[in-house]
Length: 166
Ligand code: GDP
Ligand code: MG
Image (cartoon, rainbow, N blue to C red; front, top):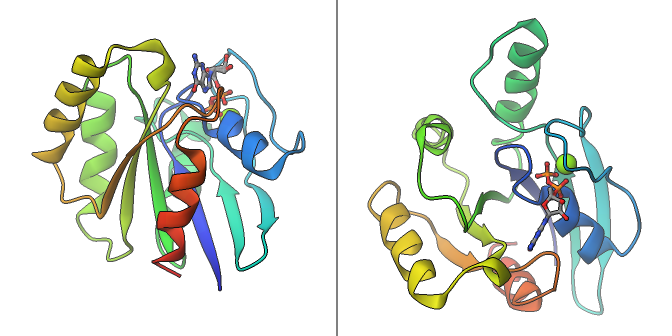
């Protein structure tokens, strides 16, 4: 099995951290500063029974200037032509304008979209439940997977679920 997965989400939700964890190399630039990742970076994870080709996208956000506009287009293009889209969000922050803006872009997309709720190491399980509930009513995600990219919680499970879609 092999498949392409694009990872989208606002800056700082942990996209690069996730990629670095699964690929096991410093392939994406990590930083506390938003928008460090200016280019698509692909990483390939080959396991005994599957090959995952990840595409790290610049953060989708409301374009405020030309470069932002360009990055938006890059990110939107990566919604199509892949097997699965990961929409990564920060568990510490609730559903907001930024998330709403991104979810609007999903309406015309047929690609299966996973909601990946990252940084669960930072929150109480009760809080996670309410985050899940708030997202569920916004979009019909194929899978909702809480993870900690930093500590590795549930990352293996996420990869297992991915295989079902490739
Ligand atoms: P990106 O902009 O989406 O690529 O986000 P990064 O991967 O650069 O991560 C932004 C910040 O969040 C960094 O300081 C990471 O160490 C931190 N971070 C990423 N994943 C996690 C996580 O699962 N838990 C915690 N506590 N911090 C995380
Ligand atoms: Mg990044």
